[in-house]
Length: 326
Image (tube, rainbow, N blue to C red):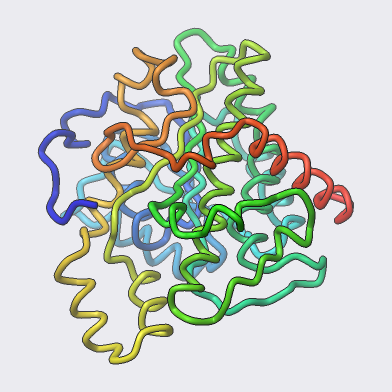
């Protein structure tokens, strides 16, 4: 984790022109997603802000369009996206395909962090639905669209999953994805157990992107798939989540604000993964890579490097989605 903004990669000068590129960022109305959008829109991209709350999203877009943030060359557009139910994620993907002609980059950034354990109507815990199953459905629905974009001369199509260093928190014995029951691993309600539950879903994000990359590579599809840890970032979600589970919420907020990265810095590694030229120039090195701030190669824990585990997660997710009749 880093506590200061790195000068090794500066999006304003190190990203190429993104004129004509279309990008979708989920959870883009605050925190890391908001500044990821800012970095990309400043370089001329048309960026869709996937968010559930339209008023919050339009307020965030107005903030981005203020003269001080200088995104005159790009556009930011609200796109309704609700990850609380995979059916709604599918509808959002269908609506996106109806309004656009291409998709160059998908950044699965939105996530729930510290919610209490809750089994939703389809028999799967809510944090797994929000952080993994809905993004899985969204990605699959958009994939044919992205494959078509990747066929165009000079295209550079990428899929990015924002994971976390928290993927190292769960014990090895808990990293099992062979059934719906395994997906519903409860962990506990203490602070450390809630972070393990969150980390459980961040393991899913890495395994999902790695298995997707293997499948695309086998098909000779030139899409680059990357997962990443954006850093320990002082986002509204992190602050609110920490205040729910730690005592002395005022002190917690002050600590996070002092020692964690700013959201602007947190958006640098996702922006790097989405559009840095070196990624396409060294595609074989970056396919299935796990990045850390600021665009450096990071280390996935040993268990998460398992191809078999990735296939297990994918197959179980497909079964659950099929049960939902999606």
